[in-house]
Image (cartoon, rainbow, N blue to C red; front, side, top):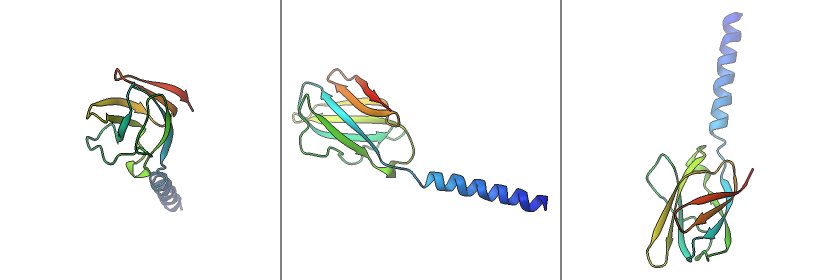
Length: 121
């Protein structure tokens, strides 16, 4: 009987952790452009990877002083730490490292390569 109970507990634990891993959700937050320039691309990647993937900018231009809502795809997994790369029309780029998207409501990106959490969950 004890073996059966032990096996049940183990299987329940495996099921619980498998279900939680399969439930990765997209992360959505606002970004304020305080860079001083109009941006044409926004790339986000989990901090532990080097592949920037696709541009997640929801429109063609991201004007200085404006705010957009970006969504990090659920396919990136359950990680919270991300890096963001932005590019302007002249081909310049800035990379922001170590952004915690799990606590984020609004992120302000600055032209000097810094960012600020403007609003947190």
